[in-house]
Length: 243
Ligand SMILES: [Zn+2]
Image 1 (cartoon, rainbow, N blue to C red):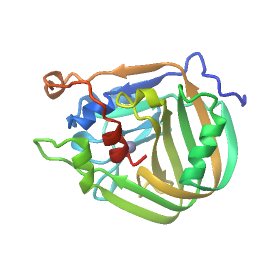
Image 2 (tube, rainbow, N blue to C red; image 1 turned 180 degrees about the vertical axis):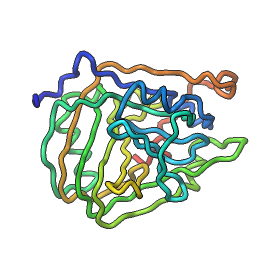
Image 3 (tube, rainbow, N blue to C red; image 1 turned 135 degrees about the horizontal axis):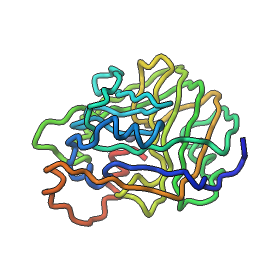
Image 4 (cartoon, rainbow, N blue to C red; image 1 turned 90 degrees about the vertical axis):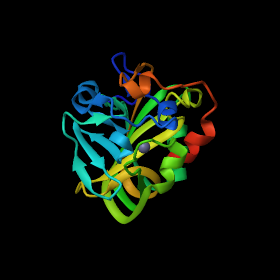
């Protein structure tokens, strides 16, 4: 293990669709799970029609649904959004006794630049983990800020599992998620979702930097015909993503 947070030459963060498309209510599944898996074995995303939160861990894709169930994702399932990589950490260290805010500050202090993307993984024991799962939306889709008002929120006291996600540059807000976008799944694969807050007892933190970012655009009719216009979505994304 090298201990260096320089980007690897072959390290790429692949993103499928973008946040401003979700903000506009474009939740129609557009990317085959098998194609997303072809681009990476590690990452996060959301289900078709915003039906829950995706956790892609060690090549296995799980969907933490809005009814609290965790299910495997079929290869032919269609996803509206995902960000994935072939996670090959170049920095690891033991961590303990951190709140969510402490954790963010620690990762900020370890990562050399706020203007690159970083993959983040923690295998650990958590005293408390609060997650949310978006719930399946009905047509016509409301925008993301409205859609997440009905989200399912759940807290587990004492859980062992994996925190997984990315830290993105502030300037990419709207294309990606500025700052932290973390999901969680427990070892039993029975609890997980989009991370709102946690208390970490102990774990192993792994990080990787990316200087290459690819964006795959949807080719479904709802996207192709959407009247998307540039606007400042920072407040809507922060509200929806809970960061
Ligand atoms: Zn999420």
